[in-house]
Length: 308
Image (cartoon, rainbow, N blue to C red; front, side, top):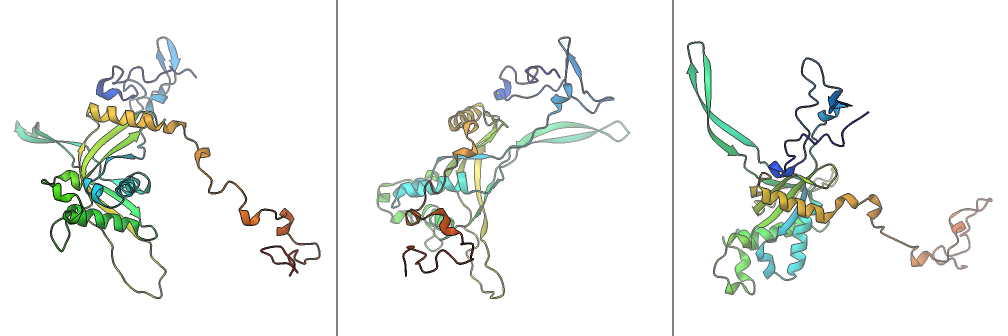
């Protein structure tokens, strides 16, 4: 099998056009002509042309929080609130949906002759709206409910006063203009390539804030098992898509700094690295039984191994 070091040499982006995203050549690997392209000739050498038919498989997004709502700077323990928001997006979100930069071309049409044929002309091009939603499961002690409740009531609006409770926080008396930076955050969403080295897509999404704190309900059903609390949090968002060079440059810079391609399962830390102190000194044989079937613990305290 002889494949050029690279099937990317003829890509659309070989000169860095369109942010330099590596792509296969559309000239090769077509499978739906009269005959499929399995082998081929390139510079008088045989190549496995079918490899140019490799599919694009969407990778999971990586969320990187760039800034947090300024209102949390005025709360007690502000660093803890910032870390909570960072963790909310980056490591606790099970699903991230609603990020969309698809293009739609609007057209008008006019009749061509008497046969019923139509001539279409473009009249407008629009980009899909991004409306980020986060799927998440509540933890013991309802930390996400607390985070969202504080974010909404202190940052956005309290349902009773109809104004943000940020006005009651120390230091806010010096604030004259309450702008969106107080209640919104900015997140960079990166779709990496399969090698985790370069960004395939990137979205710079600002103006993110929760539009609900769902499922704060109570009920009773003695015949049913306990319920998990799975939530979908709508966040909205104003996105700059991956067609923007600055967004892709930032996405690639951040992705390179993470160096995810160097990480392995061996980097997972162990919850314990030695025998617990209250087990030290115990013989491994202590967990077995004698051939008679009598426990080695008979006549001893199983906790201290002392005679009783």
